[in-house]
Image (cartoon, rainbow, N blue to C red; front, side, top):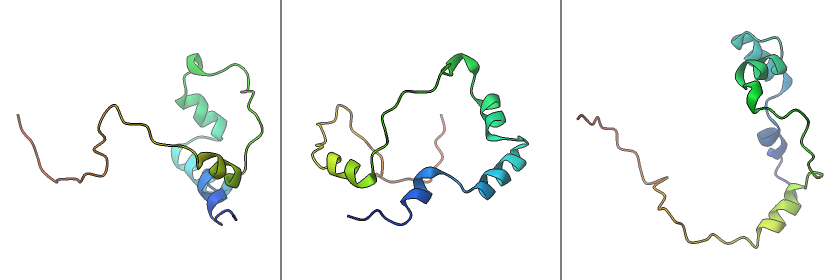
Length: 89
């Protein structure tokens, strides 16, 4: 199973040119400066996460093949349609 050619582009984020354009539009000199302005220090971790090595997309897909959807506790209405209307009290 070969990964789809756009997987990296979809999951890794914008290209450097896109990031620069976004930062310029928002008025930040760097991604770190933007994060500093957006994420409160009180909820940040003081050290990097200790994560295992990343898995390939193929290995992750193989592992997920055995997953089964459990009976939902709540009913999801996602995808049930959108009705353009105004409701008033």
